[in-house]
Image (cartoon, rainbow, N blue to C red; front, side):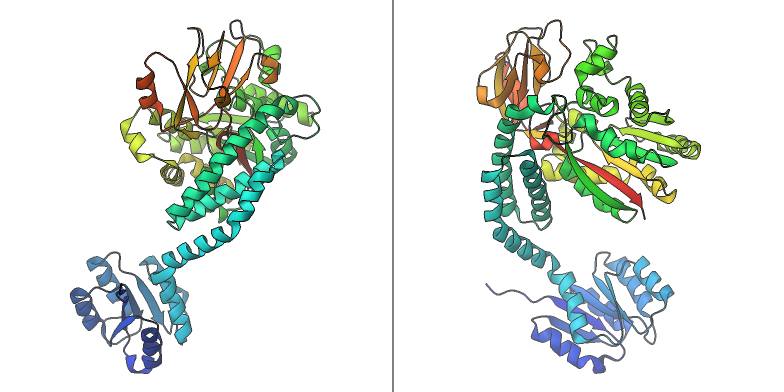
Length: 518
């Protein structure tokens, strides 16, 4: 099949001097038209479709910036490279402000011009080809890493790399190879779940010899050592997966030096357990023993004492009273007021701890809302929505304020979520909890035993002994729980939902980012 050459328009009053450049581009398959003034260039652009315009800034008659302004009005998405003799910052700033796609300073060699042209016209295709080649070269090693994974370090390293490949291949629009990553992830998900079921009880024993950092370790390892600073910001974005974090990380890279670590959420991977463990530095059973009045039957009230848990933990770790300012944000409707309070807290010193719940609310609300289900229809769409939210969020505003004030910052999350595709039937009494990825109750049984991490001993999960619960089921891989009654209705309703509370790398392997203002 014959490929239509990309069309370039070069506008320069000294175009006769550019013949070597024009020939160089034509020899590489581009169709190049040339004109000596802005009026003719605009007329040509109205008659023909060009993939790229190379535009001289200093010409008789209309200057390049004037031509650019008219071109943008008539063709807002035209790709333009400004070519000029001027190295003045003002000219460059004005050109960039008018959205030129690149900027070349004369004399530019033919190869410099070709480099700019290739990046703009062939860049996406080259990225796709490079990503495909790199992944093909790495696929065998990734498969061996999966086969040989035996320790938590192995699983952390493998999952982290697969997340990066998934992001890169989707960015390059290599959907076929992204499916290969998804297949590897499915295998890792299954094997990781079986591994966690074997070792989790050992992980949560006092003085466990070899375990990953867990929720109970986050403050001790990453926050408390930094409380010697005059000011510290601690941010938890609820229900943020590792891939979602890496989608928003580039927005912070210009503000902070970012040092990323990984830790594992405790089980169940749900806010009442994992986030209390972060703020308290204790497992749920220890929190319940110390505060028996807190642990009722309503999970919605279990996170009401995070500020007290945090203050007590910091005092226990540092041996002193650390001033804290704690807030929980459920929406951005009062972002200005939140930022004003945070600024006052920054002036007072100590640790400012903020919890942002939007992503968790989004994942919960998605299965109940057809519009949200369509907007966040799959994992790439959820990542795109996360970035869009973050760019306009009060969380990002607070982080920019911290960077401007030179305040070191710790950013993390309490658990992730997983796109659930497979229902597993659970047989239970009416007293069983209603969660779709974990259930507590009497006489619980899953139809497919391999789909769950099951125990009848609350000490395995470090949970307080319930008055009714004698069995505990956590969903593995991408399963979700349904009952025999209304089976088809609930299968249809919740299949394709982002859920959490179970055992999967997406829910358990999480980022902690140490941010040092640039």
